[in-house]
Image (tube, rainbow, N blue to C red; front, side, top):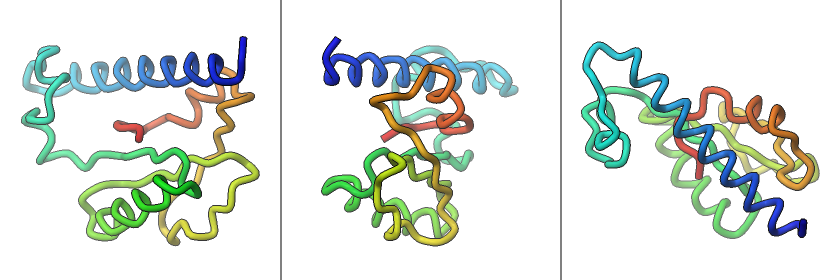
Length: 124
């Protein structure tokens, strides 16, 4: 399998894990949550829960711009931010207070991906 194919498989696994985790968390809430709530941004829990956002590629062109915007929201307390980067990535621009986790999508096993995504509600 090519590196690109492996990356797509890992991205698919990550999305599946994130959706499964989100559904599991919602089933423990006092109000029933249907799949239609999970597929829209208008969930009644959006405004009341502080989400944990995992950001991939924080040192890249797009990721560095997203980092600036999400870090500002993190400082205001509207979300928790977790920066996910390769071991070789320069994470010096990740602000203090933002959690950093290592995830190398080229070599990570499913268990390593699960550990890196633990507690993350949304992956960008």
